Length: 176
Image (cartoon, rainbow, N blue to C red; front, side, top):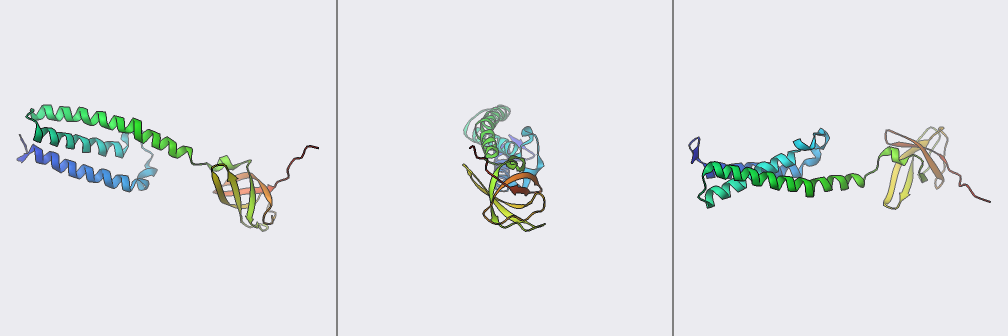
């Protein structure tokens, strides 16, 4: 069968090359598009993968089997839908949730105790190291009441604004 004077196998092959390339490029440059905040149904990775699998299975069915072209296209749609659904459920969703679980939000830092790395001058900025089981975080810091705090002092994080932590010196409570 032909489509616009071009054999259907060639159309499938061109579609495979184009959408395979777009899928590869999107995966490489995914961080550029991560700010779009699209619903999961409009995930470009799934859309590009769907068409890549559709054209690949269509090409294989058209060139290796003697099935009717309409039946080959229908089977290709079903194969593509199944594979992309499995890709989403077993690969993309677990990866996205695992990635989020390793991050922290600035509000999570409130109430934590850290240690001053770079002294905080009066009305100025220094640096605080916050240690946890999963690693250490260094953040820009300033005094909550614009006071100066010397290096190696334990501090309590009171507030976080625009990536800057506002701290006060921390005193340990001792039972006695």
